[in-house]
Image 1 (cartoon, one colour):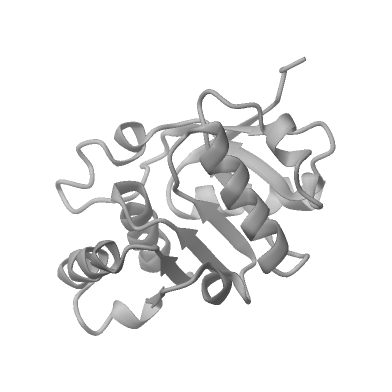
Image 2 (cartoon, one colour; image 1 turned 45 degrees about the vertical axis):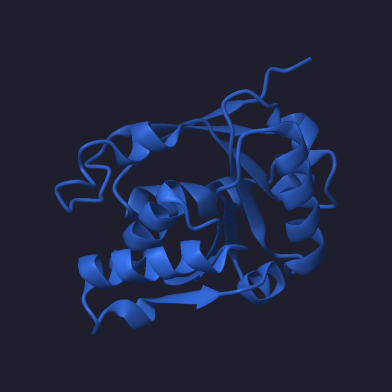
Length: 183
């Protein structure tokens, strides 16, 4: 399975490392070349040069999601940013691609309704500190069974839930799903 991560900031780098260590093929993209360079150096330090091919780098969203099964955006949790990235991912990724967007304050039901794949959208209800915390400082990126909350729109497909659940379990978390209760 190919995981595409859009945004090479702290969360994006951490997700790329965690997914790469568990055997996923990862493409990491950022519009800022300096962010990609920093991510590449960080991952080289964490994975070593021999393991680096598990994580590849893309300079455009289109290149990153061309063959993605799962796309996770790591853009700021602001309405305009989320709408723009989901619009781009929705149009550039294959129809099978599941979209995961970290957000604590926006409704996944509302965001998903702005795509042609509302049944393939999930919100990650966590922030960078909650996910990366102290474990990343120690070189341990696995969740060690910690619960992670994921929110779904009403029309989410069971296959979407299964794929997202498997991803989070594989990197060491215990996923808990709840329906978006936004009116």
